[in-house]
Image 1 (cartoon, helix red, strand yellow):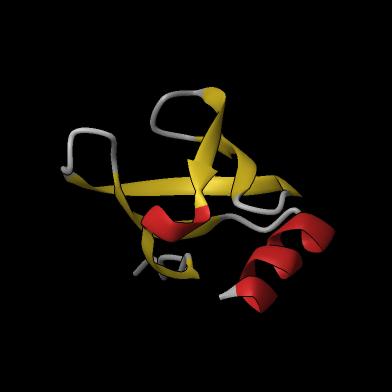
Image 2 (spheres, one colour; image 1 turned 135 degrees about the vertical axis):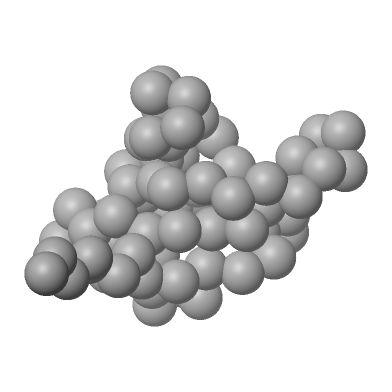
Length: 71
Protein backbone atom coordinates (compact mmCIF):
# COMPACT_ATOMS: atom_id res chain seq x y z
CA UNK A 1 0.00 0.00 0.00
CA UNK A 2 2.90 2.40 0.75
CA UNK A 3 4.09 1.97 -2.84
CA UNK A 4 0.68 2.96 -4.18
CA UNK A 5 0.57 6.02 -1.91
CA UNK A 6 4.08 7.04 -3.02
CA UNK A 7 3.10 6.64 -6.67
CA UNK A 8 0.05 8.86 -6.11
CA UNK A 9 2.31 11.58 -4.69
CA UNK A 10 4.87 11.39 -7.50
CA UNK A 11 2.50 11.06 -10.47
CA UNK A 12 -0.43 13.02 -8.97
CA UNK A 13 -2.53 9.94 -9.68
CA UNK A 14 -6.04 9.57 -8.24
CA UNK A 15 -6.59 6.47 -6.07
CA UNK A 16 -9.52 4.99 -4.20
CA UNK A 17 -9.38 4.06 -0.54
CA UNK A 18 -11.75 2.18 1.73
CA UNK A 19 -11.52 4.07 5.00
CA UNK A 20 -12.78 3.63 8.55
CA UNK A 21 -13.86 7.10 9.73
CA UNK A 22 -13.96 8.44 13.29
CA UNK A 23 -17.52 7.10 13.77
CA UNK A 24 -16.42 3.59 12.68
CA UNK A 25 -18.27 3.92 9.38
CA UNK A 26 -16.65 2.37 6.34
CA UNK A 27 -16.41 4.95 3.55
CA UNK A 28 -15.10 4.92 0.01
CA UNK A 29 -13.01 7.95 -0.94
CA UNK A 30 -11.34 9.06 -4.14
CA UNK A 31 -8.18 10.92 -3.19
CA UNK A 32 -4.94 12.34 -4.55
CA UNK A 33 -2.12 11.97 -2.01
CA UNK A 34 -0.20 15.18 -1.37
CA UNK A 35 2.11 14.14 1.47
CA UNK A 36 2.90 10.97 3.40
CA UNK A 37 3.53 11.42 7.10
CA UNK A 38 4.59 8.95 9.78
CA UNK A 39 1.08 7.90 10.83
CA UNK A 40 -1.15 9.68 8.32
CA UNK A 41 -1.43 11.03 4.80
CA UNK A 42 -2.45 14.45 3.60
CA UNK A 43 -4.65 14.13 0.53
CA UNK A 44 -7.16 15.98 -1.59
CA UNK A 45 -10.53 14.25 -1.11
CA UNK A 46 -12.72 14.48 -4.21
CA UNK A 47 -15.82 13.60 -2.13
CA UNK A 48 -15.38 16.48 0.34
CA UNK A 49 -13.60 18.71 -2.22
CA UNK A 50 -11.04 19.61 0.46
CA UNK A 51 -7.59 18.64 1.64
CA UNK A 52 -8.01 16.08 4.41
CA UNK A 53 -5.84 14.02 6.75
CA UNK A 54 -6.33 10.25 6.73
CA UNK A 55 -4.86 8.01 9.45
CA UNK A 56 -2.85 5.20 7.86
CA UNK A 57 -4.14 2.53 10.27
CA UNK A 58 -7.74 3.37 9.25
CA UNK A 59 -7.13 2.78 5.55
CA UNK A 60 -8.56 -0.70 5.03
CA UNK A 61 -7.80 -0.96 1.30
CA UNK A 62 -6.35 1.14 -1.51
CA UNK A 63 -6.31 0.77 -5.26
CA UNK A 64 -5.95 2.51 -8.58
CA UNK A 65 -8.95 4.24 -10.10
CA UNK A 66 -9.87 2.47 -13.31
CA UNK A 67 -10.72 4.70 -16.22
CA UNK A 68 -14.12 4.11 -17.77
CA UNK A 69 -14.19 2.91 -21.35
CA UNK A 70 -16.98 4.53 -23.30
CA UNK A 71 -18.92 2.81 -26.08
